[in-house]
Length: 371
Image (tube, rainbow, N blue to C red; front, side, top):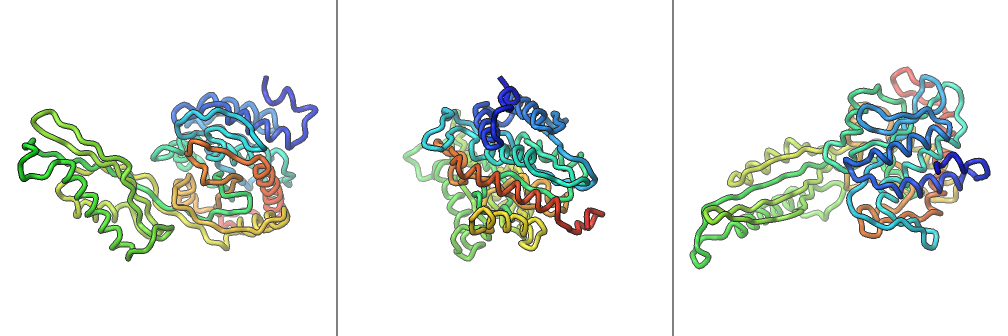
């Protein structure tokens, strides 16, 4: 039974909660999003959108008409890990509940509920592949669609928070190989050589950061794994590392510096995205601040040390952009991923107010948008 068959007697809030619960209940690990995408397209069509699947496999729904476009870009894929879907004490548990089906469901419900004037259309996207390097869903949008006039990224910010920026990231696979030696001999093992490389890198990043604690303005390196193997003649160590880059530091610079530092290892790089930060004077910020205050909150402006699809599309589209969504990001990717349903409802109310304010408001987007 689809969401539409039970809509007649339901309130808007009940419809939104049902949409969220059903969406979380459909597994959609990156690369396997199709069932969830099909469900979301059907749900959006039933809620008044004109929705379909685009060339990248994203769910795309549009409501309203006009030359001015507000895009709400969420992602429908999740990391792996089976978490039984259940509601306990007003909290929905399940993989993707907060990252980021909660924000995505709020986008869809808010767009259906918001009263927008003629001349403004709203596009909601459930993008695929955000949890993978390269974000194929968002990259396809960036390369094939014209820039919207306004862009809101669906990520958990907390119902009273607005995210202005994300760090960049690049992954590195480093390989150290040497001929086998006797363990009783004086030569270092390949595991010891690899660990010394890591120590050298850690000392370098501390120097780059002037020993500042990790944060939005620092270069951070995470050793995700270190594995060794041998075939009896040669032994090999493989280090998997992820770098998080602050604004102003490019992936190319990090590659050049680490390549010089680790000339004794084979390095395989996988770029993801450069850092991106919008200005707090963005025309999107004030409507969200007002909406949060109207719902009884004290707004918080945030930056995040992870990445999102904002990094992929915003630098190219060059339109006003922020990230917003209900939910506590501390539960991202965890074994007990969850979203508080009261938080979800408050975030939904904020979105409706902000969208209606943007629809009524005036702005100059520099590309012939509404003024």
